[in-house]
Amino acid sequence: MSLPTRPPLQPAPRGQVVDLAKVRNFLISALQKGFETDKYLPDQRRQMALQSLAQIYTRTGLQLPEDTREKLFREVLDELAGYGPIQPLLDDPEIDEIMVNGPKNVYVEHKGKVIKTDIVFENNDHVVRVIERIVSPLGRRIDADHPMVDARLPDGSRVNAVIPPAAIDGPSITIRKFKKERLTIKQLVELNSLTEGMAEFLQACVVSRLNIIISGGTGSGKTTLLNILSSFIPADERIVTIEDAAELQLQQEHVVRLEAQPPRADGSGGVTIRDLVRNALRMRPERIVVGEVRGGEALDMLQAMNTGHDGSLTTLHANTPRDAISRLETMSLMAGIELPIRVVREQIASAVDVIVQQTRLRDGTRKVTQITELAGMEGDTIVLTDIFKFEQTGVSTEGKVLGELKPTGIRPLFSTRLEAAGFKLRPEVFGVNVAEMLAQGRRSSRTR
Image (cartoon, rainbow, N blue to C red; front, side, top):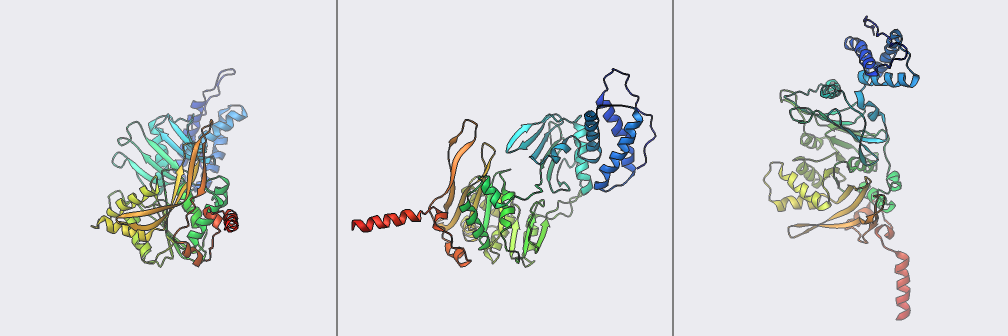
């Protein structure tokens, strides 16, 4: 990188406080020209900037304390080679989500709690520059005519940005961070997100090729759970994944990953989730995993489940299993095919085997609060049977939700399918106390 030939920043007289904001802006502008003319790969950009920054800083004659200089360098590098003020948040593995509500209000989700940070942008234009830095490498645009954009950072994190006039109080950025380390089912048990019995049951359901829907609200952990359940799919099966923004991290070898694409600026092109679901049926899939159903593709998914594509997995937004059924009905009707509601419900009842309800509780913890079987129809109503359920007993003085995850004592009707696949689950998994039953049997025989 060629260094710009501009007059050096004059050092402050002895005893005078240095205006760090002025120094930072000087260093950024001094380096900016080189970054505009030279092309570097992302991995090279930060290292090249650091070398040039050290040279420019030396020329200024400033002698700042070491910690101040390091902080200054980090801010300059974040601005030029990263995503400005929010780069430290992106680098922090403890932060799950970043929410920028204009230049002065930056929030994060940390360990399930949403808190306000002390991070600020200079102004609205500063926020917009960061948004443009995110979307430009993807060939996307954001302006007054196209004020909303969905994007994905190089590490897989999902980004949604909105600018005026759609965003009234200033540009907004929402980033759902991509977890580099995959959680395992064992870790979910250790986090009390579900019990060992529930984990054993879900693994049996996936391997036995049951069709499973993960239901939950925004940020409840649906995609994380989908990732974990997908890991149970046998390695010799062909899997096609379909996502709006690629997040799944399947470790199997025989995987085809498909991702929806937005239309171009002129409105042409674009590939929807529904297009991908229909296309996947022509790809000889043994498993179809849809990141999330949101519209008419729900009907295509149900038809796939009903026509030999057993073992499919997907997620949807709903707060209870019953709500999930209603959402499936509504989305199926969005497909544009005139179907009586009873026919839609029959499709759902015959296609879906299990609904797993994932919930983000008031204290920020995430739990599987229900595992529910679709047990057929009675009249025009789909029968739902809870196999496992979370029973809340109260809230502690620290605000922690108290309760217990436990089986309801009911065996699902598809137990024979699990046994046919080699899973003869222990009675205790379903809440049956065998020792107590034997003791009762002995007591009753003595009284006869």
